Structure formats: C-alpha cells, structure tokens
Image (cartoon, rainbow, N blue to C red; front, side, top):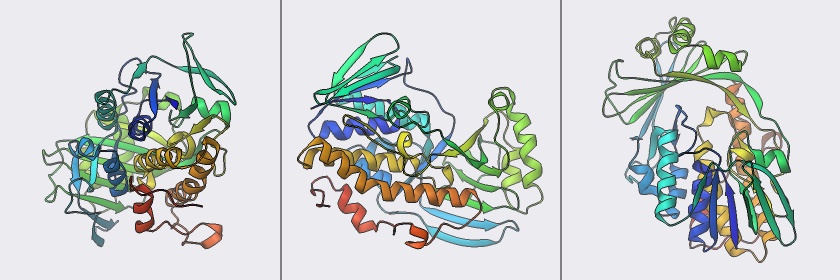
Amino acid sequence: MRILIIGGGIAGSAAALALHKAGFEAAVYEAHPDNGEDLGAFLTLAGNGMRALGQLGAAQVAAGLGFPLTGLRLLDATGATLADTPLGERDDPLTRFRCLRRADLAVALQQEVRRRGIPINHGARLSSLTEDAAGVTATFADGRTASGNLLIGADGLNSTVRSLISPAEPRYAGQKVFYGYTTEAPRAKDTEQITMIRGSATAFGAACSPTGETYWFARVTGPRATADEIATTTSAQWRDHLLPLVEPDDTPAAAIIAATSDQLMVTNAVDLPLGLPWHTLRALIIGDAAHAASPATGQGASMAMEDAVILAKALRDRPSMSDALAYYERVRRPRVEDNIAASAALSAGRPPARDGAGGRPAALSDDELARQLEWTTPLAAR
C-alpha cells in the first residue's frame, strides 16, 4: 500500500513513522520549501504523547528536546497554592512530560523520518485531489502529481485536505493566547515544575528551563486579535497590553511578563466543530486537521501522536481499507472530541463536564489507552 501524507509537521511526521513501521510505503508532501512553518509557540508533550512516540521508537527524539516537567503547582490570584501534584511517570525519562518549542519538535521528527528513508517532498502545496475505487491522486500547485492507495491530510488547522473533503472553518474559542520567553525573570527553584495561575483576568502558566529561560503563556478572554493586529503589533505593545491584567494579582505572572522583551507572540484560540466527517473512500484527515482544540488542555500534539499509532495499527490489522478507516474513526472520535469539549469549557471559564454527563462519553482509562497504543497488541474488535 502506498500512502500519501499531506503535511510534514508533527502529525504528518508521526504518521509517516507509524505507517513505515507497519510496513506501508509512505511519502510526505510538505507545502513549505524548507523544514516547515517556524512557529514561535511552545507546547507540553504529555505522557500519553511520549508513550505513543515510544511505540514508534521515537521517544528518545523528543526526550532530547526541551526539558522535563515532573510536577504542577496551581495558584490562585492571591498566590495561594491550590494544588501541588506530580505529572505523569516521573521516573521514566521516555514517558515524562516535556516542555519544548513546537518548531524544534517538528524539525526533529522530520529528521527522524528522513533517517528511516521515508521521502519528504518540500514545496508541494496541495491544490486538488481525485479519488476512485482504484486509488487517489494529489495535484500540487506547481503541477506535480502523486498517486497512491490512501491520502492522509495531516496539514493542520487550516487544512487544505479538510477543505476538499469536509469543509469546516475553525471557530474562535473566545481567548487570545500569549506566548513568551525570557531569561531575565527570577529563576524558579524547581526547573521541572510548571506553575499554573488562575488569575483574576487571565489563565497563566510558566516553567523555567535548566538554563534559566522561562517559558510562559497567558490566555485572555475577549475579542479575537485581527490579522492586522498580529502582523503589526510589537512584542513591547503586547506586553504593555497584558501587564495591567496581571498586575493586580499577587502572583509571579507580572514579573515574568515585565521581564520579557522581544520574544512574545499572540494567537487566537480556535477549535473545530464536533462531528465533522473525517474521511472519504481514499482520504482521511488526522491531528489538528480533524480535531483541533483550543490549547487549554495542552493535548494537541499528544493527540496527534496517538492518531498516528492507532491509524497505522488499524490499517495493519483490519481486513480492508474501508473497515480500517471506519474502525479508526470509531476508536478515536470519542477521545479527541472529549478533548475539544473539555478544552472549550476551560477556555470559557467552566469546568469540563463529568464523564458521561450531557451525552459526553466516559473518558478512556489509562489502561485501555495503553492497550490501544501497544504496538504488538492487536486492536480489539469493535
């Protein structure tokens, strides 16, 4: 089976590694001419994402980036500690939470794809696709074409593949998200702890690397930032906009933001509607292309890693492609749409619904997720 993967970012590279391991001929087509779009945001790769990478023999790739997070401290606006809890499997370096820059992870995974002999074609911007019972053909903006048995859209939030098979526009989730880096803030005592703050006007989080660089974010409810504002507002202007929102609180947030000079960016938190179709006869969307959530749960990259493993296992284990795609959707949709709903609730300042409440499916247990991800365990009949 020859599989075309549209998008060479985190989801696309993970899918390439998984499909290659399952014995399929995979090729990646990336629109950007070099490594990909260099996004300044950072992310936390959670234990489930690390576990999924481990099934692909790639956990060491991520473990060499950023720094580990083994604890979480939650503060309120007065600086009082509400919770102080461990994160993930602290004793295993290959399943610990990692704090790292998104672009660094994307580049490292692309390098691993190349190392395994999987081709990556840059400057290949998809313009159309055609499919029938025999296969699928992708046509790119420069006139190139590629054909295969299956096309996977791993091309992110503004997915071209999604626009061709299942048109749906991302929805504003009600918050602007600020990301910043500084080496000038007071150094945290514990460099493996992320501090989350329920501020009076923001949700704030920060972690300090072993080298003394503080990574921080702030989520602010209000109108979305326009494209012009994002393009023309300077880091100093964004900082001056954000500071009055955190200065009334008795927390470390104001000092961290004030110490940030030119490494500050802002994005709009968005998500995709629930229930949109994911696949046709020969095309499937995964990762953010299919189930982008607002960043409140911090699970976007980890969910993409899970997608890659479960998809490869479904294509490996199920009797036909149509059965594999339908099975993949049955397994993945409840979990990722639960994440969309939970993240939307947090972005709106509400607690996520309880398991099973309001028609929301019960959360997948850790044991069941581990069984799904375990490479040598066949997928259960459903």
